[in-house]
Image 1 (tube, rainbow, N blue to C red):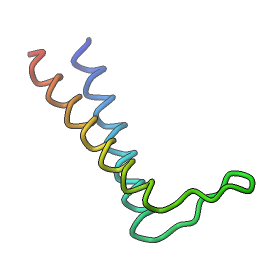
Image 2: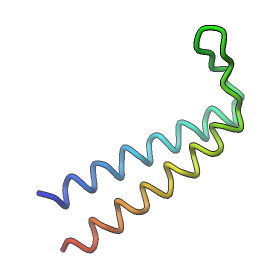
Image 3: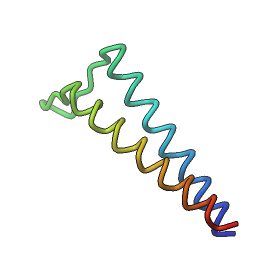
Length: 64
């Protein structure tokens, strides 16, 4: 059961990382009210989400 939860978390983090990369490459503007979110933040978010995904997949593999 815990292994499945770790795998699902890994997939979600990987999807978030890919969405950040997509935004960064296509230069999609994001604003919240008057605040513009810089593209560099998506690069940082992609790296962080990718490493979290790797961590979840690694933890799921060790649960066997």
